[in-house]
Image 1 (cartoon, rainbow, N blue to C red):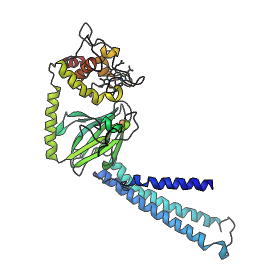
Image 2: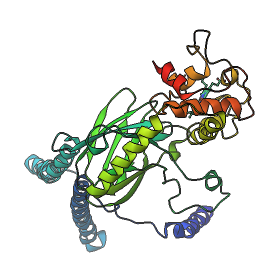
Image 3: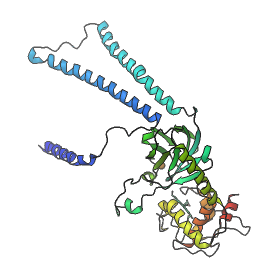
Length: 388
Ligand SMILES: [Cu+2]
């Protein structure tokens, strides 16, 4: 009885939870690349084949059980085949059938899909580099109209939404400040790598997913056939912020892409210009840079999450001297940590520009409860010099 009660409670629980599936869709999301379409076809074909085999075997089984039941006078036969020849025969036939299905009927389309995924040489018209790092994606256009454009794509879902203090938005955890922009119809070769741990750039509607491995460049490609905004996620468990590094891709017509590329190149040129800045400007810019890039680990307040992530408020390194008497930055100084990282602290020299690094250092020295007196501010020109 106890057991039945438990099963009953379990079933009731299951039924009660069904409304969770209210807008659950059972099929794949609409494929928008040739690769996604091809893999979807493979999936459908295989589903049909396995369903046919399943029902055929089940039907024969049910028939045999029913037709040869005891009440009709059937007797169990000795567990011996009529002859060795028959035994070999009825083993080989199913074996041959499965061989045919696996290697030919299923094998050929599967082989086609896999080759297609790996084939990055054929006719790609542009190359982009995607770098995964804890916990954001960085995109770099290596050629074509947007050559040289490089930016970081950060989650924009607010902290209040994460902590249930605000209504969750429509694209909760699937929204970023700078989406990747791709022209519709172009075959784009993707070089993928990571700066710290394994990540995986995954957009379900593209049908491509590839693990980004630190120290290795791996390849994949996409060719988006339909304009639109596509969303995905990092698909490799990559630490505390794994759920906070979504992928957003805007696929736009070529003309629109060209306009975007030109604008982005201009913006980037302006942002990379080295100019003398006031303390207030540095602190204001530093605050945005900090909250976007650093607060996940060091927290918005600068209190950190010791012992894993040190506090910056009152930190010897955050407050200590940055430059030596010769004007060069000191080892283990604030500049050293920012440019080169250490352990779990990422290196930022490839991600942030001179102005952003100068601003975030100044922000940490003059805000978050700190007020450094030696080297109170750092100028973009000093960061530029420090890189050399
Ligand atoms: Cu990741």
